Length: 159
Image (cartoon, rainbow, N blue to C red; front, top):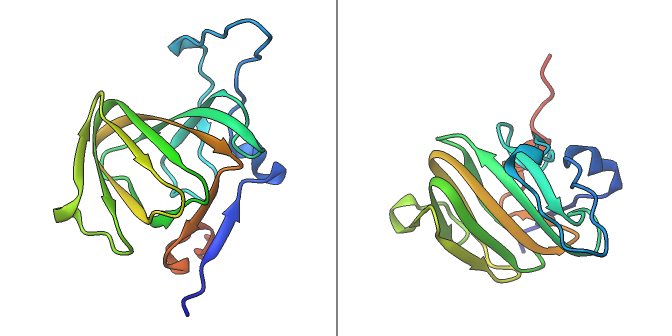
């Protein structure tokens, strides 16, 4: 049986998530200028920038975040124990299902496209042009790579 590596974005990884604007009992408005972008968490390949709009992805409960991904960015096959909802705000990316990354069978997603990845569905992403993606779901956000060797945290540290 294949062994999977699960990773939870715990409080120790909380610093990797940019802080969401303070929310009170009233409605919350977040303008693009108010977003606080920071590097993505260690479980994602380097190059992604993330801004949390609402909630805390490392904790139980709802969250909304945005991810800026450069052209050529790839997230290899992985899955989450909770549903993941994706909306492309700008740019173009491909999303595919399955244990292997097969770009020829992926769906192209442009601005306005939405995808729902049910819990445990294996999927991957290939970014074709600079893309901003909005992600929402229920935390904690856990990412499990189908092939543990694809986990960026397993890479040897730079000398």
